[in-house]
Length: 253
Image (cartoon, rainbow, N blue to C red):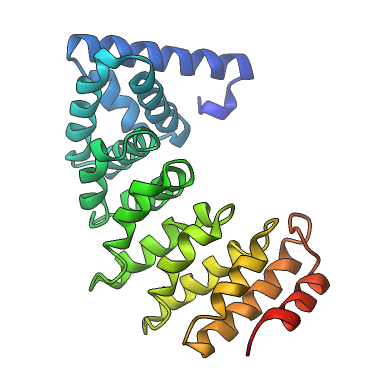
């Protein structure tokens, strides 16, 4: 039975069982069930596994070496689902201690399967939101990588921090303004739109875009920002009309 076919109480009990089992296996250096959870066909079982590892890491100092050892082993597994789970678990730990799991992301960026690579993007988002200094410093080292997908993944990954603190990521995004690869350029325009519609963010984005040299890209970004204010009108701090008026007043064409 799938995780969300269970009742709320049964789901909670399943999560408790997964966490308890993983803790016992970490204490006895056995990983049979840990590996099985990480490879489960149900994405919510895998999620319960990596969230449990993150919580156990925070709650039990004595288990930290065993948890890092397990994540390292899972990350080298032949199953892409297990590698994906390992990266997501590393992302949970990286929200408080990025240094200890940085090597996972250095290698995960280049995984042969898209699912682990997507887990890297998701992890950069959640780590960068709450632990920005080391995560953004690490991200910056990949902004000019010769692999276009790496550049795109990093651009996408730092987005979430920008929704509350656009000033933290705008200098990094600016380094991509002359990127000629369509997928990177499109992601850059998308991210600029995504960080512009939250409260207090439009002014910071427009002020920074005024310093960019690639006016064609900025023009596309402005169009995306205006469009986002309509697409997400139920969540935008300003209406589309208010955003247009602000841009007309403060954007230096």
